[in-house]
Structure formats: structure tokens, C-alpha cells
Image (cartoon, rainbow, N blue to C red):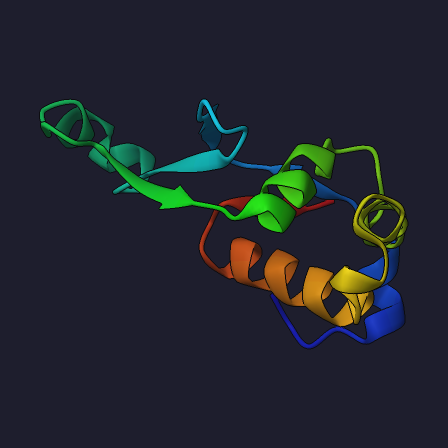
Length: 111
């Protein structure tokens, strides 16, 4: 992902690129394959634990659920602000940072 202005990032639509599970407490656990290359798919199937498991906190879980491939980052920020209020501030900074981290980790792609 190249350098992007905040306005450009806010207009992008994040889409989930990996699977996930939801715990009994309602928290999301992301399931990222250990190998992203399709050429390594055969080897991936042989591993006893083929996925990295990344546990998200309540805010991260909410954001993950909001990344539906239809909402822009701006719309996700508005949903976070509505759900968590002042406790989530600075919403834009935190949400963009999480989305950028998820993109760089291969968990999310930007449309």
C-alpha cells in the first residue's frame, strides 16, 4: 500500500481477506493462513495449525464486523463513534491505524 492521504484512506472501502471466529464473549479471532501464496496451499493443509490466530479487543471486534466490503473507512469511523462514544476518541486516527495494520498484515484489502 503506497502513501495515502487521510482523505483518500477515509474514502476507501475495506474488505475482509481472511476468515474469523467469534468467541463466547463476542470477541473476534482473525484466522490468517500462515502462507498467503497460493503455491504454498498444499503445504498449508499439512500443518497442524495452519492459521495465525489474532484476538481482537471489543473495539477491534466491532470494527472487524463493520468491514463488510460496502462501508467506507469514514462510515466505519461514524459507526465506532456511535457505538463507543467519547471513549473511542480519536476515532479516525485509531480506526485508520487499525485498518492500515490489517491491510499490511494481509487481513484486509482496500477496494
